[in-house]
Length: 284
Image (cartoon, rainbow, N blue to C red):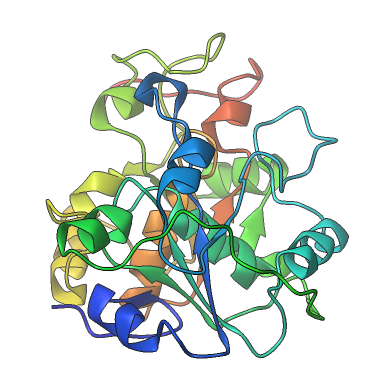
């Protein structure tokens, strides 16, 4: 049983006990890859944790970018959160319908905006439902709430910074994609992208960090997994994946382990795999 920490991860027991707290805000951040054939908004409308607001990862993003769901500007984040009734002084809990898949991305986004009173629900909606906890299909009443943000530029990396880190070897670059996609022998789900991985990066498949029920493994088990792939703890970490969603599961795991020096490559493989002038490695 993971220890509840309102800044990283909380259990279904914790959330149910705090569900009626006036300053609690619950977010359904479900998002799926096209091949999963699931409609997160329709699922939210059919059933969600009482009071939960739906956070659309694709829409609350930088619409000027040609890349999928890049982090929104602070201004956009503020206006969307205010409209959702999420603001200063709130404890936020984020969950998704896959167990743990897209919720950590929204946890990371809040942190990018300088908000740290945010946790992911361990095991997400599947665990909540399996335990017979309350759900509803009514949209919550949302009242505008003031929110102030302060973007933490150190938590995100762009392609230039990642290319430099890859060349210099001064960061540990960890890729959350499946081993087959990392090696380049499994096709990318997004058409037109090259296969393989960033030179010098190591593969930590996000699923290896989770138990069968979608909960995160214990900090001790997580340390063993990262040590097993040879992560150099003396270096800051950059996480990457297909499009910057599951990479955040690694960031959350690092935070659970007490390793604070980590950032997320927002463009991830959707960007790196597109440019022929960026080197790609195949194999282990």
